[in-house]
Image (cartoon, rainbow, N blue to C red; front, side):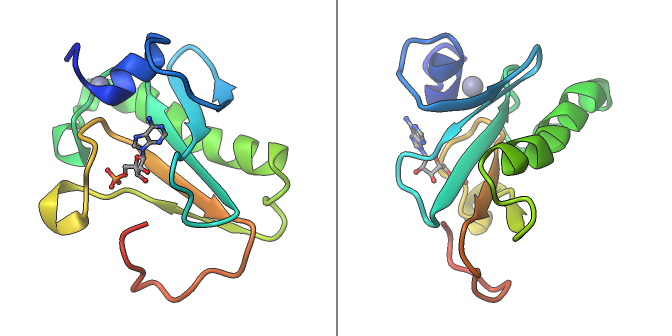
Length: 117
Ligand code: AMP
Ligand code: ZN
């Protein structure tokens, strides 16, 4: 998936404001933040959406989720709390087809029936 925008970010071909990196995971600030803190956590491996997650991705996916509290602590929103969102497919509002988890925080967020961030 060479023309995937998030793969390009992983390869350093598109700049991003990175906040976290390890062997399997990269996280960077969303370019259009929907909250004071809005970070995208992605697997470095190209997985198009939640529908494409495979059992062999178990470790990578675990690392994606585990990055969230580390990033939240780093950005000072762990105590106040935050929201993790994955948009899957057209009805889920997915725009970029490289799996990512939105970490939103830094303010009291609205109800669960949020519009697509
Ligand atoms: P989704 O609708 O869940 O697919 O979310 C895609 C998100 O990626 C949106 O919140 C965009 O603002 C964000 N986004 C798109 N391009 C970039 C980029 N180059 N750097 C950071 N965030 C981006
Ligand atoms: Zn990709």
